[in-house]
Length: 280
Image (cartoon, rainbow, N blue to C red; front, side, top):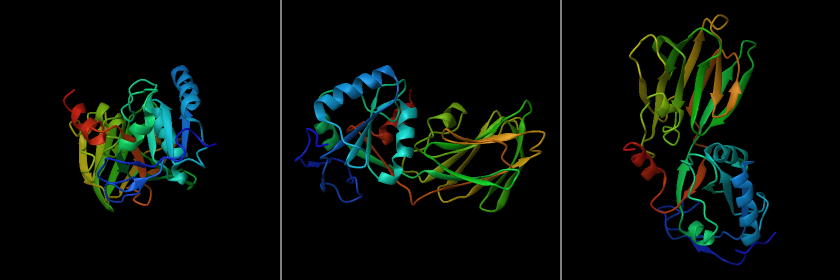
């Protein structure tokens, strides 16, 4: 369906355009696909926005506008990844770290001026007791969490070298810069600058070594968690919200072949938000 933006062509104010080209290149936003969570505020926003600007299917759109909270934003990024479209979120949820302020007005202008954050997800390969390998992508983090009453025991291998023979803990996670303010930060991990090319490896309630808080690793590193005593101390793996139960090992690396493009209002991009979060 053609919407109210048909026939217009916009220019962005970011350092790179939505295709990675130099600043000032034309970016057509002829068609918008609005997607909403089931939250009442998001459903109301969907009705209001589509009435004003029209609605296109994601397959026909030039840009996706996600209405909801951070969880719905991650869901949208995962589900629309094959379309390779930029996603602009408007907060109709709770925290909205990945979202822009909701407004019914001047959406074409906001899209035209939006800054783009280009982020690569993590690729997870989880191996189960039957040898089955499950693969998934994570935009925020891959986490391993105990799935029983006893603490997990993990061995940490980085680029084929054992770095920690045994970590006794409730869990551990590997976070991207974009995800470093989420579960990673709650587990007392560091906030990473968006352009740092660094991953945060963070323990969750470490018991031995008691004071170990984790490590900073280069983006190119491959991290493998091996579960020790898996029958006595079962562990599950989560790639964002996708879970795999009773894993024996989990291998994680950055996936440069996949790029998510998230749009933010000028001056409120990921880099600024990550800085602000450290002084909150």
